[in-house]
Length: 83
Image (cartoon, rainbow, N blue to C red):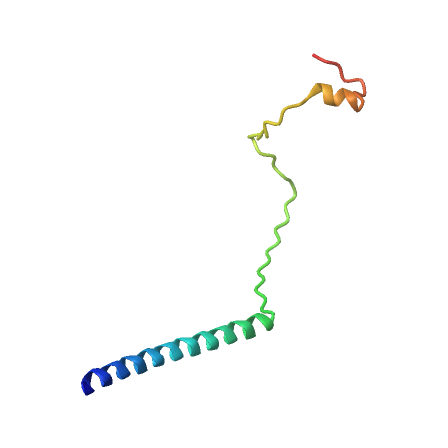
């Protein structure tokens, strides 16, 4: 009976040490990350390239939105006629 009690106590102590160790690691890690975040780190890499001319793309992308002529005429057609 004494060995069963000591085995259970040993098991409980091991679990307690694991939980305390994990909580300690978590607290240390979170403190480190919060301190890093509050130091406002900056990583900027800017490269500006100036060109004399800009080439337009050979492909035009259409967004497939429908043009509603009735809605357009309600707000003034400005001389646009229906085809």
